[in-house]
Amino acid sequence: MQEQEIFINAENAVAGRLASFVAKKALQGDKVIVFNSERAIMTGNPKGVFDKYVKKLDLGRIAQKGPKLPRRAEMILRRMIRGMLPWKRTSGREAYRRIKCYIGIPEEYQNKDIKMIKIEKKITSNSISLGEMSKLIRQKWKNKKPKMLLSQEKEKLQ
Image (cartoon, rainbow, N blue to C red):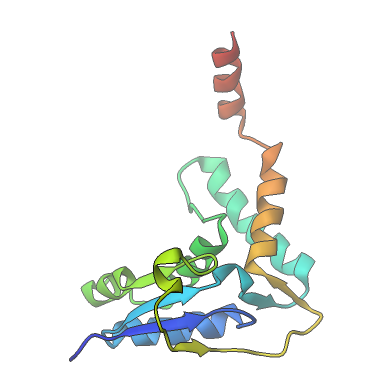
């Protein structure tokens, strides 16, 4: 089995469909590189999608043990891909290592002549991009910190 590099442009791609495609290619032994991760979209009512993700984030904050979910757009997409891999098996972990997600297109790939696969869907009014969701999450937690962290910050100021 020969490993080849597959380049994917995530712009206007439905995140779940993109994640399943990437997971399958990685399991087949290909190295998959995803560009423009922040422009992948999640369909559904934006407020509902955001609230559902924040509810999962809150679960990890209460016990301080987990689940620890990402807040950055490229890491959210990578975590979605991980959910579609057999993580407890060696093949799933090896496939996960073959996946890279980037915000935008890094400089190292801009000058290369690359054939990119586009997995597009017409954008509906009921959708939110991963970049927008990531910004909303960061704004929500900017002023909301666990009590333990607040007490540590007060000690540093004194």
